[in-house]
Image (cartoon, rainbow, N blue to C red):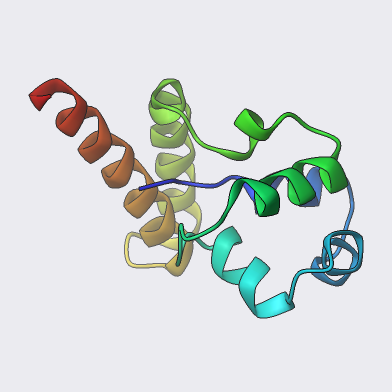
Length: 109
């Protein structure tokens, strides 16, 4: 499973989802699914379009295992601000869980 940081990169570049759609010729619904990690079904061609539009390397589109500690800190701040059952906290928690699961699968190989 791939875990994208496309939304974070897009927002850092001050681009709207519509701007990214126009730059990549990809649909809003598809980009939204990628940004929200609701699908990891994409081709290298799609990743190249997105990385070119955001002016980043393809590898920069993904969370890595080294991001877990940063995400944990962000989760703590989010829980303090919005509560444990907030959508924001649940999303960060889901990303952390996914990264940990990927690490565990790699250990089993």
